[in-house]
Image 1 (cartoon, rainbow over the protein chains, first blue to last red):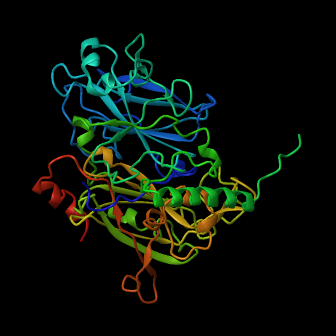
Image 2 (cartoon, rainbow over the protein chains, first blue to last red; image 1 turned 60 degrees about the vertical axis):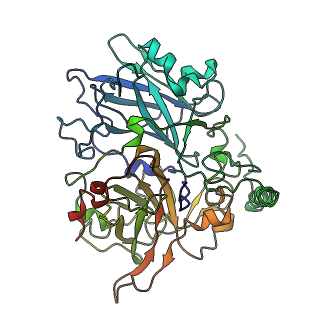
Length: 199
Length: 266
């Protein structure tokens, strides 16, 4: 149990666009390089409208399942895999990363990419995951996925495209609402990150 | 096309007051204390279609989520912590120093991690193409800074006190002066973006974004403290603001306590 109460989050607001994006922020791998692929999708609101002022960050293992501890994400050298990237949505709500398939942390574990979503209108960041679609047995055995109702599980699983790309949409609200996560030990000593009673 | 009638501050303030009252009654009746903003906070109109309607799903962090992205020497220059030296001339406004520590929920320093800030200039204008507020752009102020926390979790920025600015949530809606902070912890689940406010701002009770944190104690955690010891003679006013990230699930090691970027901070 935490001894200190965490500082509350606040919305990223509308004007992060001149501060957070940086050159090649969405390129964990060099586009066109061996093993590189495109991870992309659309961020939409409860009316199904695209959100042009959202920002996604991903953090993932290397293709061999190892966790990168390399620096240099803000100044991409074109060679080092740092495992972390940031992508703003465009005016049509679309985001794109160039990355590699995340490896499994252990044989038989379902590989996934950890995702954080920020947006104007979103009062606090949201955590979620994008799983690779291929290993059906690993997906079925995954503790998180198997704890979800069948109709929501799919929101966390990307679709493989011809050519190797991954398509994965984020729906903040409504039909097909993405499953968002709160973590144990995540500083909830009461209301936690969850919506609060009476609010 | 007729312009829709804009809601007044009075109407918004009534909504804010009703939610606050419900919350106080809930806590008095033994309900949970809120430590984070409500995702569903209708007075912040942009949140209405952008908050999940289903409860956040409890998950145990796994592997990648138990570590944090790393940033180092090549990522951040020490000069980026001074927002007043980016251009050739002095920015307009009140020069301030904002300093504090980034700690985890167990009070341990978060060392060697990236802190990013962005803010409006002294007249309340952002360098952003979508900010159309007719206040002057300051050619000597961009409003973006970065640093890497020291071995003791410390950060420090020199900047200009940002101005309040209008936004279109409702008629006569003004944001309290604030600085946006982006923080990383020792694991990915600690990632947070928040806003630091200045003490005594009369706009606090009127602002739906600040009030989306329904608990007064929690809101107070976003307000910096004026510190005369941090104030420099003939130069700048000093504010302190410490940030607490969530607890850490991972076993903490001595190397992390030292931080690999300690030498960034003399």
